[in-house]
Image (cartoon, rainbow, N blue to C red; front, side):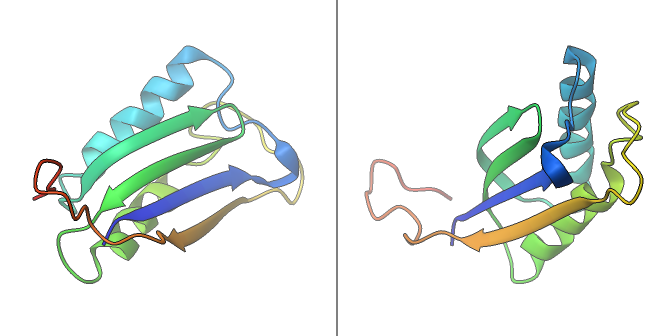
Length: 108
């Protein structure tokens, strides 16, 4: 099953303020693949949130992968000082469609 996952900062605060912050996050995602081998189909990074389209290999992999990313990536890791009481929030949304039914676009 393919999953659309996203994470945003509270109050619309920025998660990324410079190109280096985006690169740090992508390095974290790559590093996390060493702990949980999940297929990343697509991603989109924006200043105050990000999206990942993930295709986990086994039950429980989605939660492990997302936990690693969301607990490791914080605004302070990126050099951004959060507002008092601010925390990241994470939401997991199951995709409406099942894995690709087309033989040409078969995901393995």
